[in-house]
Length: 78
Length: 166
Image 1 (cartoon, chains in turn purple, brown):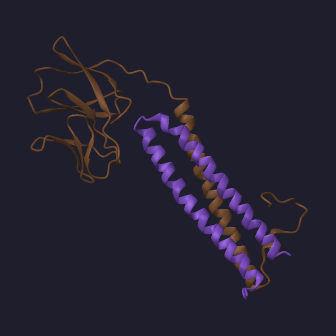
Image 2 (cartoon, rainbow over the protein chains, first blue to last red; image 1 turned 45 degrees about the vertical axis):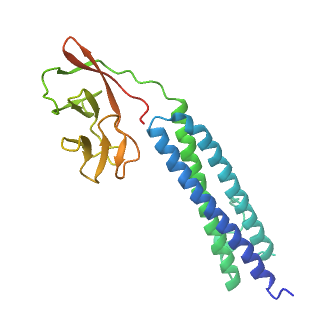
Image 3 (cartoon, chains in turn orange, purple; image 1 turned 90 degrees about the horizontal axis):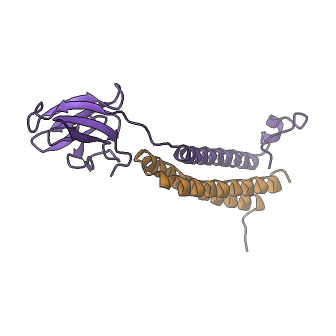
């Protein structure tokens, strides 16, 4: 039997989403610095895949934020 | 999801103000998540900016500049000159190779270390190969930009900078 109150269950889901966003952000920071280093070294072909992956990572972060916002609306605001 | 609020809606402070402790946990987490998402947006803009710069890049036009006479510098000797503009110091090492004098780490001036036959940045102990400017050791991530030289009528001429580094 799950004794966790519904409000805390919502918090667990939000914490999980937050950890995922942080992992995605770390990947995005690495991607930005690696793309910049390549660009400054004259390897301009790395810019397009870097930008595409960065857009995908941002979309994933946005999706997770929307999830957090929805949980917040459902639990806290009723 | 509300990114932009209507002026006539409930004031933000009333909507965000947590009455219960549990509510405060939700608000804090949601706001932190929003901050992280905006950071992600900023980095995406950074990547798109790099893409824009890469797509709009045009090959630079370099002047032909005489650097030194062939017999002007002794073997193992160096000469500092400016190329392509007067604000870009470069280092010519007699074996007829020349590199930008700005370290690719934090732009300190590199110098030629004759005993080890390599270029050294004294600021953070970065070392570069004299053969191709590649990083041998230290914090720099990129090779030194190379100045392409041409021998003509006993003169060494700088003709362009190498676009891609090793």
